[in-house]
Image (tube, rainbow, N blue to C red; front, side, top):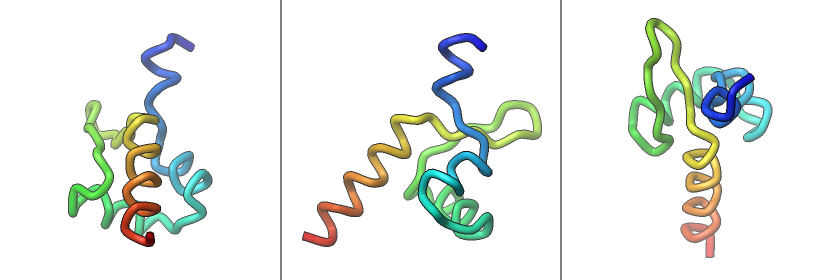
Length: 62
């Protein structure tokens, strides 16, 4: 696995990390609260986007 591939997560991987359901993850990507890219027909989420999302959620909760 290359470094670039390791930095992109699949939707199931994001679901596991955030403890969210599939629909919620797709809703977050559609609303652009969670940055994602499309590679072919597959949705990928950069690991930094997951970290940014968590940071933003913590800031909003404070």
